[in-house]
Length: 124
Image 1: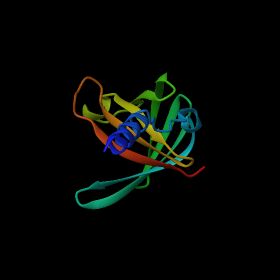
Image 2: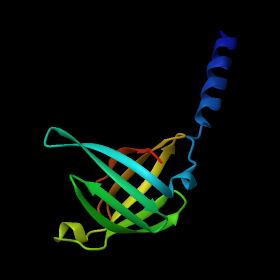
Image 3: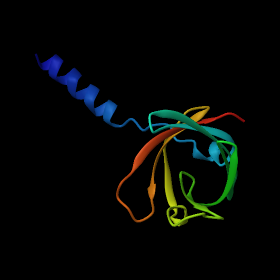
């Protein structure tokens, strides 16, 4: 019984030290896709990021945003030419985990507590 208790304790101690992989620098530049569900339809956005600028392509239209990096894994996105009040709000993005070709992130409007999760795939 002592051995079982010891094994369980060692397992929990070593697994609690696990840190998810976060190589955020690999995602500062490139071409990416993001798929989301809008009105029960799957919609895909493609965007190109060059350090401090991001160009989004969605349903045949393009839009440009500034990117201000807080640190290697967090940044603020703000549309350069907003068409309405909702587009004027900045969005805080935080990369949570990375793989070789994708990252999972948390995002929300700056100053608000409601956050959502998403996954981006790097295609170039």
